[in-house]
Image (cartoon, rainbow, N blue to C red; front, side, top):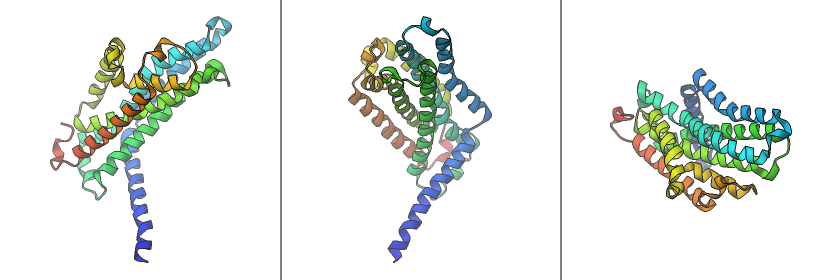
Length: 262
């Protein structure tokens, strides 16, 4: 009876601590300024679709339009920036004001704190990124989804957002300048280097997203044909998530907590 009675209690503790971490993360992450920024990122591709739809038949092929806008506006801008804002906000704020000390002195395992934070950032950024894709596609093509391009990029954006969020959550525990470092990474590595040198495609989250999209749509484009295989993309994404979890957990478990974020 003791073991039977103990199991529900363990579950309550795990999920109860997860709810507490999520509430704390929400309070430290979601601010009016952040909400405005995220709304603009989600609405940006939709505004371009509105212009496209307003021109009617003069706009051209909707599939090619969506492929280009999804890549340029969603995968290159909205997904990494949304993930960066959500992944770095909570730990960065707690590191700056010292409340991270209180969080790690609880009985909650460090890996569980990090995992819940990563899942929070990953799910929210993935949902917002997919919403940007769906909204743009709905405006441009109505209820139809020619060649499954919107569905393909929706899943691709969700995968990329989760991958970015995991990495940026770990970066927030490594340095207090996580936002600056993340922006530099997005601008130079994803925006310039990986686009210039094909050899770096296997190390680019953006190219992984394009690989996922290419595997789910029959649309043809140089953007979709230049990336790595779907298998390489999934392996790369999974590797980033696992490594980020390990690094963040070890960083959070260090005894000299005052050095976190320095």
